[in-house]
Image 1: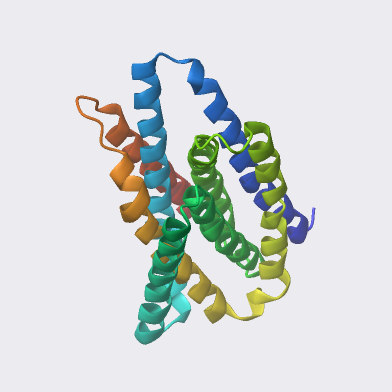
Image 2 (image 1 turned 135 degrees about the horizontal axis):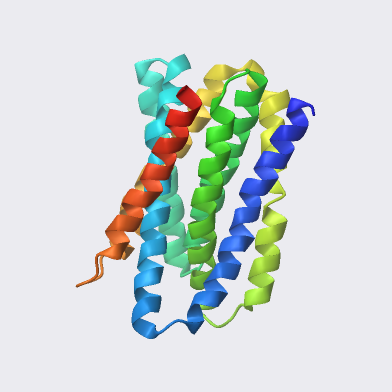
Amino acid sequence: MGDWLIVALLTLMAGAAMPLGAMAATIDRFLPRWLEAEFQHSVIAFGGGALLSAVALVLVPEGIKELTIPAVILCFGLGGLAFMGLDRLLARSESPASQLAAMLSDFIPEAAALGAAFAAGGDTGLLLAGLMALQNLPEGFNAYREMTDSGTIRGSHVIIAFAAMALLGPVAGLSGYFWLSAYPSVIGGIMLFAAGGILYAIFEDIAVQVPLKRHWAPPLGALGGFLLGLIGQMLINQ
């Protein structure tokens, strides 16, 4: 099987985690109210842990390899500022799609980086694909809840839209494989841009939703999300 086909399949599977997470959001409504609340907060925390592991273990270590310190500051800072601008725009328009925007904003750059990693012959592509899937599951869950709680969008339409958006993964991944792999500094910049944006999203939108009084599962969910990323990194480095 050619590497380009592996890239397409991995990014498609990572993208498929978005509609799977959305479908999971329809199941937990049958849980008791107290358990549903704890489950929701745990899922949010797990997603935050997985995102943090992507930043700490993949995006930043790989992104800084080809860039100077000023370039790192610029790309990382621009990522955070871009997410802040998007966040303010969504807040001004009162759109129920902030989780959706965050999900796509990190999924597409990571898919491009995955394709470039395979073209360069590195092993980080497999880890990145796993982390993308891990973070897309809880993000799909949260985005579905956010978009359907308004009552103006049907849940089935959201799931279909998420399934269609999964196709953006192979498009970005193959772009990285065939074109961006010749420009490692560009890939590094994309990784750091995504890292800055993800870090902003974690502390602006995700972490603030995690606390739940007299419940201890949510912070353990964050530990679990990060631990899975750490185990993946250790397996690849063996």
